[in-house]
Every structure is written in structure tokens, then in C-alpha cells.
Image 1 (tube, rainbow, N blue to C red):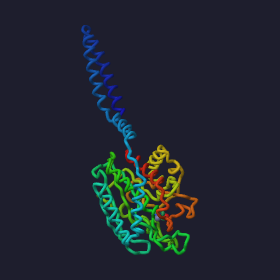
Image 2 (tube, protein in one colour):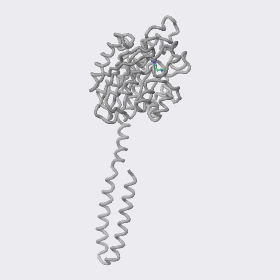
Image 3 (cartoon, protein in one colour):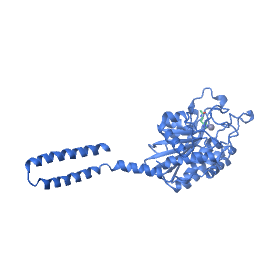
Image 4 (cartoon, helix red, strand yellow):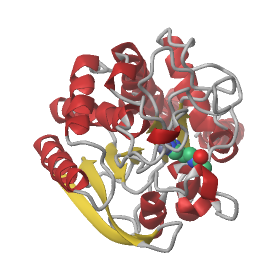
Amino acid sequence: MCKPQISCIRFVFQWFSGSVKALKSHYHQGFERLFVMIFGIVFMLISSCGEQAPRSSKQKDNKTTNLEVKVPDFNADSAYNFIKKQLAFGPRVPMTTAHDECAIWLESTLKRFAPEVKVQEFKSRIYDGRVMDGKNIIASFNPQAKNRVFLSSHWDSRPFADHDPDQANKNKAIAGANDGASGTGVLIEIARLLSWQSPNIGIDIILFDLEDFGPPEDKQTNQGADTWGLGSQYWAKNPHTFGYTAHYGILLDMVGAPNARFPMEAFSMYYAPDVVKKVWDIAKSLGYNDYFVFENGGYITDDHYFINQLAQIPTIDIIHLDANSVNGTFYDYWHTTKDDLTQIDPATLQVVGQTVLAVIYRE
Ligand code: AHN
Ligand code: ZN
């Protein structure tokens, strides 16, 4: 944007000095009057050249406005209640009544807040060869906008507590308060706030199904990573609208435990380092750097991995990682029967929800 302006001024200057020389040789008298006229023309030309560059100054204005834009206040109690509501159905294990009923509730709740909600039904083969029905639920805000960002989580819960220390619990389904319901609850609260105040961009909230039906611990020997994230794999190959794309995506996974720590997950850093930096910087500016820590996390095969790989949309995972936990990767109660409502801390929901809101409203 600067270049044309500089060359324009240079052109006018050259033209001006050339004209003056020519006029000097042709007219000896009345030169002063002509000089005033030429100066006037030059002035007009410079002002009209200046009009070629309003975009850069406007862009700057926009940036300032976006930093000053009012970001809605995330309501952690409301998010907590959305988590509680999901848990009340029982474990949201695919092909169960609880799963069916929760899908209906998610759809109708999002329809209260979003102008467009789509339920993408699909079938997918799980690790043992059985075929399962799944539903990805997608709420779109500002659906016509070309500039889009998506926010996502998984809403299904794991059919077995294979990491439970008690052998008797290993075949029980988990409540999935943190693993599944926490991210979904935060996103429903964000949907509620989006219905009150629209940001400048289009937002899609995508709730993936069948994320957590990977093989149980004792059957994992020959299973590939693609036994996880079945809903996101389906969506990445069959987006809910033809040719769908977004500038970037944010996945929330296990965002509700007390004192959660979100290191910079390694696939996120590989595929979308700028998005990680943007989100972590905003979290820091809000005083949340005890949660959004500037440390490198390991590689997690989560929904974002498949979206990066298959849909090529830069997507990050905000995920609670803890290398010192009993399982060596995730928080202590991961895939245990203890992943229940008692493990949800509204303070953590607040940190994550407010950070994501600041990110999208500043776009
Ligand atoms: C693997 O352990 C391969 N993926 C974990 C993804 C996950 C499960 N997130 C929540 N539950
Ligand atoms: Zn899980």
C-alpha cells in the first residue's frame, strides 16, 4: 500500500520539475502566475494520489477497534449448568438412549441461540469392526460470512473406564464430565452469548460425536490412531456445507478440572503455531498464564489432528495435559469413573471461556 503512494509522489515531482524547466525557457514574463497555477495542479494531483491509500489506514483503525471491542462476560455458572444437564442423561455412549436424548437436547438448545443448526448423521466402523451411528451437531452464526472460525469439542462419552484403578469399574461407561461435557458446556455458553452480540466474523460451533470409542487399553496393540476421532474424521471428509473452510479452528478437550494446565500441544504447534501464539498471548493478557502455560506439550491424536490432516484447516487443541499424572499424559481421572461433576471447577471454565471469547470477538 505504501509503494504506489511513494511512486506517485515521485512521478508528480519529476513531472513538476520538468514542466518548470520547460516553462522557464518558453516564457520569461508572467512566470510567477504560471508557477502558482502549476503549484495548484500539483497539489490537486498529490491529494488525489493520497486517495489510493485509505485501506492501510482503515485496516489500522479496524485493529484498534477490535482491541477495544466489548467482549461479552463468560458466565461459568451457566456453562457449569450446561455440563450438569448433559450428565443428567447418563453416559452419552453412542447407540444408547442417553446418547439419543442428549443429541436432541443439544440440537434444540443450540437452535435457541443460533440461526442455523445442522445435525450430520453418519455411520462409522469402530476398532472391533462394529458399525456405529453418530451425529455431529453444528451451529452456525453469521452463516453467510466468508470469514469464519470454528470452535469444537466432542460430546460423546467413553463406553469404558479402562484407566480406572478399580478392576471392577473398567467396563463401566464414564460420566465424561471433563472428557466431553466440559468443552461442550463451554461452547453452549459461548453460543448463548453469541446470540446476544454478534462478532465481526462467522462462527461455527461443531460438536463431534464418536471421538472416544478408541480401543480399550488391553486391546490397543495393533490399533491405529484413526480408531479415535471418528466424528471429526467424517466431518473433515464431508463438511456440513459444500467447500466449507475457516481461517482456523479451536478444539476444547478436558477444560473443566480444577487447576487445569494447558501446555502448547505438539500437533497444534506443528500445524497452527500462529493460532496457538494468538490464543496463549490473549490468555496471558487476561492474567490466565497459570492455566495457559508457555510450555510444550506432547502430540495428542485428538479431533484437531484429523481436521489438520484431512481438511487442512489450521486447528489447535486446548487440552489439559499432565505428564506427572497416574496415566502419564492426561489429568488423573482421565477415562475413570471419577470423571464426574465433582471434578468440574467453574474457575477453569471461566478461564477457557473468557479466553476463547476474547479471541473471536477481536477478529
Ligand atoms: C488418544 O489417547 C490416542 N487420544 C486421546 C484423545 C482423547 C480421548 N481425548 C479425550 N479422550
Ligand atoms: Zn476420552
